[in-house]
Length: 189
Picture 1 (cartoon, one colour):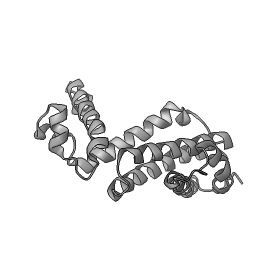
Picture 2 (cartoon, helix red, strand yellow; picture 1 turned 30 degrees about the horizontal axis):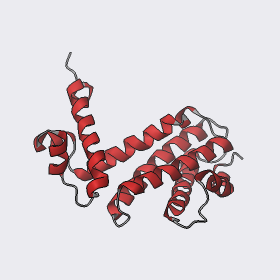
Picture 3 (tube, helix red, strand yellow; picture 1 turned 45 degrees about the horizontal axis):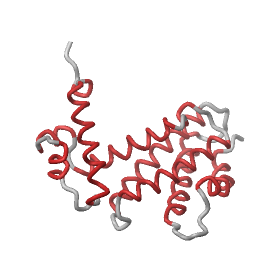
Picture 4 (cartoon, one colour; picture 1 turned 120 degrees about the vertical axis):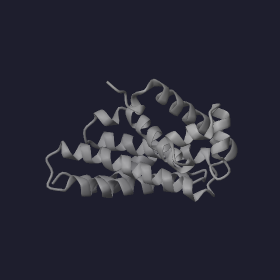
C-alpha cells in the first residue's frame, strides 16, 4: 500500500522544520522582508523542497496561522465544549490573546499579515461556533449566526489589541464587557 506524502514521516518532519524556521525568522525580519531563501537557509533545505510544501511564503503564513489558531483552541479545550456564556467568554479571551501575540511577531505596518490572521481567525471561529450551535436546539441558522458572531468576536478582539493605552482592560475584563454584544447573535430562541 502506498503512503500519501502527508502521512510520510519525512514529509511531516520537513514541514515541521519549515514552520519552525519561519516562526523563528518572522520576529527578526518581519513578514515583508523575510524571503523563501531565508527560511530554507535556516531550515537547512533547498528551495525546491520548500516549494514541494508551499507555493510561496503567503501560503506558509496562512498555514502557520491556521495551525497556531487551531492549537490554541485545542489547548483550551474549546473544541470539546458546547455553547455557553462561559465558553464564549473563554473564546473571546483566547482570540484577544492570539491577536495580540500574532501582532507582536510582525510590525503593524504589514497589512498582508494582519489580513491573513483575520481571514484564518474568522474562518476557525465560524467553524467552532457553528459546531457549538448545531448541537443546540435553535431557530437561528447555525451558519449565519456563527458567521455574524465570528466577525464580531474578531473585530472586538482586534480593537482591544490595537488599544495601547494604560487604561486597556485585561483580556478577561474586556471579554466580560463585550459578551453582551456578542451573545445575542447566538441566542437560542
